[in-house]
Image 1 (cartoon, helix red, strand yellow):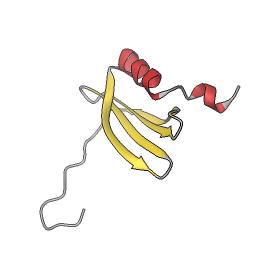
Image 2 (cartoon, one colour):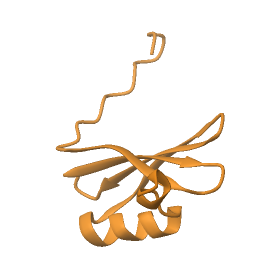
Image 3 (tube, one colour):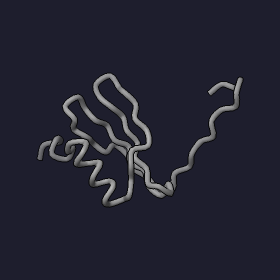
Image 4 (cartoon, helix red, strand yellow):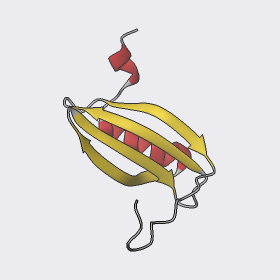
Length: 79
């Protein structure tokens, strides 16, 4: 089995995460050769971290439960 067969197109993976876990994109960052995306459920029960290559293949690289959001730094303090 090719590694690419486990990495469908982004629309296919996003649809699967929405249907199975009620996850939607919460963050997207450009990387040198693609994107890094974080999908979360509405109440923060689940999270999936996804990389997307230049050809649009989306691979889940990590997942978890019980998201804890970090507080933003206070003005004037290092981030």
